[in-house]
Amino acid sequence: MRSYNRRTEDLTAYIPQRLWDTATHNDPEFETFTYGDNCETTPRGASLKRLQQGDFLFFIARMEDWVADGPTQRFGFYLVGFLEISASEGVLANVQAEPSEKLLEKFWNNAHIRRGLADPAHWDRFWAFAGSEESRRFPYAVPVTRQLCEEAFRAANGAQWRWDEHRSDLQVIGSYTRSCRCVIDPSTPDGRDRADAFWSWVAIHDRP
Image 1 (tube, rainbow, N blue to C red):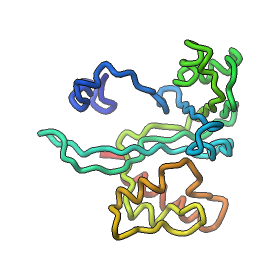
Image 2 (cartoon, rainbow, N blue to C red):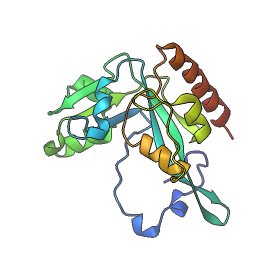
Image 3 (tube, one colour):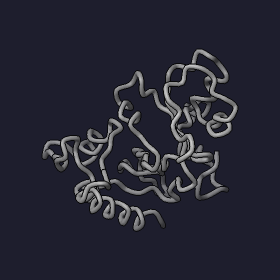
């Protein structure tokens, strides 16, 4: 497997050899821009059922900083990309059977769809989401820091996140991002300001 930014570099340098033959669930995928989740059966993803055309779905990952000598044990959360939900059949809901040929043209590369095509037992009520042409994978992962969270994100009750002195920033961010939910609603005045702050942050960090 090749690096996204360095096509001549092999990613096995960053993966323990014991995992080289392990199958992985490639979801989201940033080739045709789709994502699937078990929204009907997993509370973590239940809020995704409210996604509508034009909404943005961002993906966060925990990563470790590497230098020439190898791993550093310095970890952080990063945004790796997003889908803008497509205007045309962007949501495939509660899938219990093979979708139509027309829908397969849009969702064929999604991991859940591919599993279902290989084994009908996997038509297990999952949901799948397709991104518009505005969707993208970030060339450089965007750091999710305390500064960004305080400027742009809010808890489910609308309050700012609580930064407990007994927990690290990484632990706090992990706890607030464990479930899928709306953190910025740009239809509100406060949400518009926070959306502007968020996109400004992305523009600064989505580059070398």
